[in-house]
Length: 210
Image (cartoon, rainbow, N blue to C red):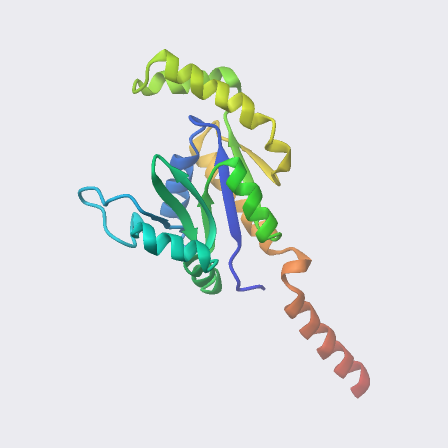
């Protein structure tokens, strides 16, 4: 089967639990790698270069942009954040399925650059459950929660562009659903043409030998 890893983009509403699901996926399986982003913000206490982020100066980051070294990038609160292409390609070549946890606009840019990328959108069982989870965090006031729900309503309009919807009702079931989707994608004919062509050549040689 194809040894090249898959590029997997995971998005979801704030509160849907996508981050928790990705953490659990990486704990359970060694076939995945979570993409490490580059950023121009200063490292926080305990953070290490190459683990939480690749820490860059503004000049270094802008050179990466100019040299087309980023899969995607954006600027938030005066700092750049982006996905280094070299890291992604290195992990894919090593057979890892590389996960990019990004929002819808970034996901659609990835799909344009990498048509074979698999786009997953994590959703709660219902909007009511989403609201309950956001309130249950106890970390934000109601105004912030309502803003997140409003943002979710806007994001819901773009979900049709994704390949798969994964419902996060039970964490373990959600993780298994994601893993099964990726395993199925790896078996697609288009991703295994080398194997198929080798078998065809062998069959032709057998036929000619007869």
